[in-house]
Length: 101
Image 1 (cartoon, rainbow, N blue to C red):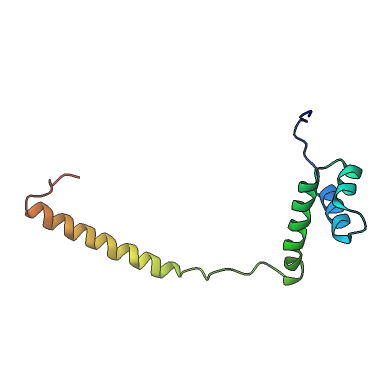
Image 2 (image 1 turned 45 degrees about the horizontal axis):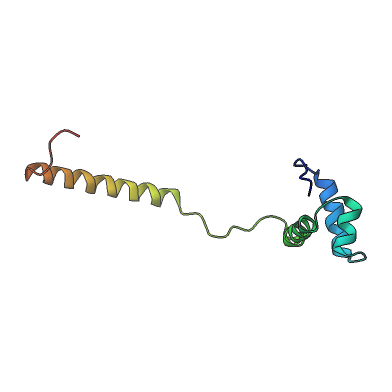
């Protein structure tokens, strides 16, 4: 079997092949021979088109999880900084941590 150099296909070509596969007028083997692409690649492109089709009508990508409020995160950073400073002072007074950091 002869190994071919890696090829890149433009998005228009991928869409054309994927839509032909979705139509189902020809088998994957026939499409693969017609477009000179491996059948597994056609299946992958068809899956990408079908998965992404819902996003065309959604008007935008919905957020999976709401972003945390930036003020809350800054407050948490402040709390943790105070705790670290307090614990470092307590350890240095107990002689378990040197005064230098």
